[in-house]
Length: 443
Image (tube, rainbow, N blue to C red; front, side, top):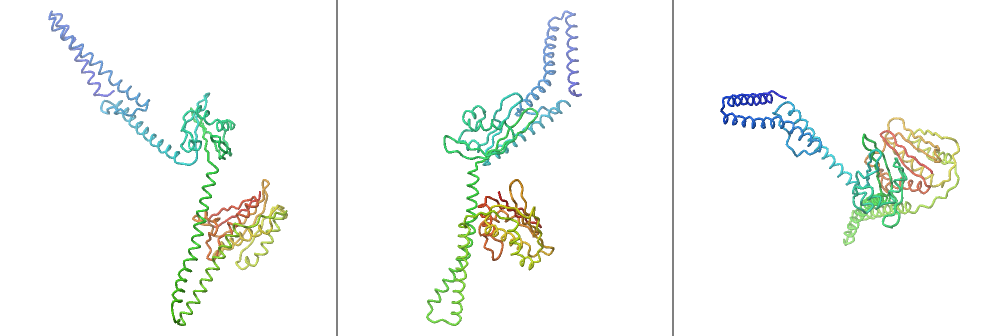
């Protein structure tokens, strides 16, 4: 256990043996009191020797118990005693550091879970035992207006409808919507997603819950915020110069005599005001059209014929811009109930956008149109090999009046999306450098 420890032990044994021999010698020579005195000293040294031998094992036991119970308030054992204590001290410090790192991660983990709006419930169970709550974040408790429970029985008692729905999943991985009434109020719709993880000792069942109403409200608020930004920007761009020109006209009106230059400026100001007014009227008309487009009058129509008709209309534009058109139709007739005029408008708008995206392209320009059916749905894809949509504006392409064109109105894609939704369909897109794909899906 180390040279120093062995030396100290040998010294104590030698001293005790020497005193025992001396005490025996004194007792044999009838020096009773001196012999007894030496024997008392031997007894004291024996007790000290016992403590000396016991203390290292006590220190080892205390250190190991602290590590087992994760109590790292004790001071690490001294490294100077021997190699055993040196290694034990290093192990203790390593475990102590690892423990506090895990505690820090746990704090960050809990703060992160409590900061998100998604409700999280994590259940845990050992083999042949019942489920119990491992973790419940604040959003989950807030959703159901209850305290943060740590007992599955309490949750079952206070939220029986939700627990029943979990039992119906048989604690398997699912993704579905569910309606739950809280405190006898109206049913609310939630998006439920579960997953299961197995470790060596436990099985964990993770439940995530999102309020569909909250998600919709957030998206609606963000959409209105984005729309108001665009509208206010458009109005300021129109009204600010008009206000400036009105001030100039007021100045002219106060003049008793006008020079020829004043008359020219006056006429130019009126023309500019008229131009800005026409622009504002067009803006308002576009807004009215966006919000009040007629309900689709659906008729069984061949989508292939609609696409071919739009391509024929756009043929001069394609030729002027040297764009090659490629069509891939699953078959020559794909019949679906649509409003012919509205769908033509969507197609013309998407094709026009592709033409615009292909401007300033030096290599071969190409637009590919596909029509196919899948899982009782029909898809029309329009893909171009232009520059692609920049990441910064991808979230804005469907916002009304947002445009990157100098003379664009900014309602084409938003109106097209509304038309597709009126057909119970969707308009989506994917884009990367060198390619943009718009997908019209009909349900």
